[in-house]
Image (tube, rainbow, N blue to C red; front, side, top):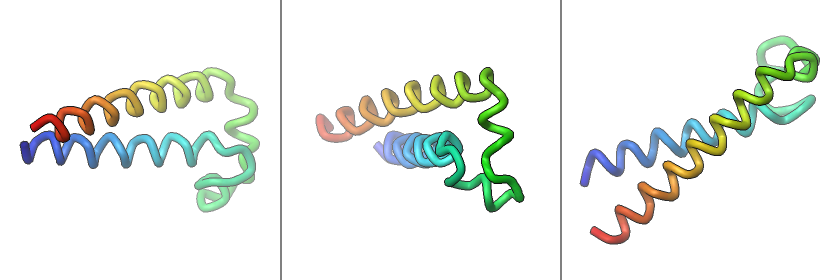
Length: 70
């Protein structure tokens, strides 16, 4: 059960980071010295971030349901 809680926390952190990196002109991009132009010009990176967001969101939901059942 502790392992599920740790996996849930990790999945939540990955979802948060992926969503912040997707924000155009905001999020973490100004913290690294850019205004988001790098992410706007890289379509493949955006697709990867969307995929990571979807997969980690599904995993977060699964871990949450498993923790409620137990």
